[in-house]
Image (cartoon, rainbow, N blue to C red; front, side, top):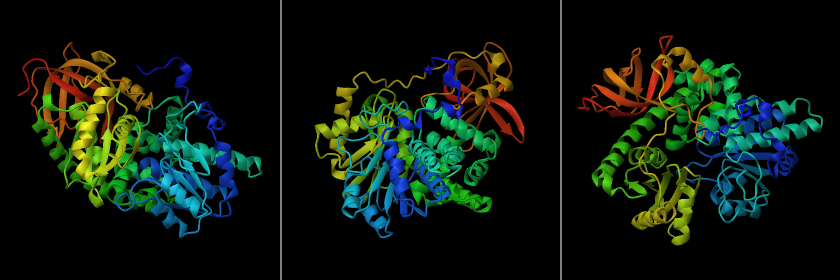
Length: 539
């Protein structure tokens, strides 16, 4: 299920990462940056966690390397949109940079890089997004997903690409006589871990090494103060940090700033070396995240009402949802929630200025989101203004008047490319877990066996249980106490966002075994992914 072929793939020593020198064009990229060390360098980031961690990593490393003048610039998603646009280049040009470095973006910035070239500003692109048919005319392009790349880990997040660049610069500087430079980038593997997990890239062995090394720094109190503050604000203990804490606690708080306001507060949280400001930034980010939750809840209810009104039998192969009141920064989350409900690719849209819609796509295994958009664009030239992304997530812009035509075209291409797509929503598990294994010791062992994540999922079990007790906690979470039907001790369970039905008798659960901590006391807890009544049907 997880593709392991040898015990070596569970060796997460830093020396086991893919060689830095194996990333194509990395020597040219590092040499260009070093050449500009006495000039102003502006790092152009993206407005999500991957972009924020990439930006913080590059600024921290270059400053520690002794570079003269390093700044960052991140486009506000509502004013400039994504990537190195011509408008952002002109904003950067006012600061007279000698070099622009993109992080987590740039591979599709054809017009922006042409603008920079026209102004005499070289651009180094570091990105991990899939390239289109045409590449921008950058001074150097660093991306493991470029056509013909032989780099063994094409799943690097943007922050992973940035880390490789910083590692090569550090080594070059050390070879030139700057003692200790090669050791600097590894100090910020906590940032690499956060960005990698939050961007939900597949955790191949290389990414697991990077994440595990970052988690070790966080647990050992050697991370940037901002990550500690974010975890504490979320009620998580840094000394016991696991990948899910990064993905579901620290990451969403930074993402919320980029979704609703400006990602800069998240970047500043990761840049400060002072615990006091870090705590204040984390508090601000937590407040923004709470606002994000409220907006998301309203949009989610509207989206669910729409798809439910269609009826399950009328759900198209690619579901498009849109409301003119929706917030641009939240549509990706809505697409993910509707996908979980419909078990098929979903694209959620929000209104943009000038009669355009901004869409965010989330896909299912076996359906490549970006390839689907490219197929629509090829079959219907001009229908999509622009698009980009990955296999499981992508973004696009189109005219509001073209929405119906786009939805029809997307369904058409789904039928052509993915006629056998699985819309069942069936969950594949690791089988039954014996009742005597649902104990704290085994739960701790599973927790510590990670890092778990996309492409390397945490063990998921299935089994029949008798419901002993249930109640709703929070707004929508189902809290249960259950006993294995075959016999065993009662164990706590929680099903997030699954409150509603009242279960009696025997239920079948698909679940993960986790460690719950309450008031300093740890206990085993089942994290329920799916619940189905077997006897004494739900009321």
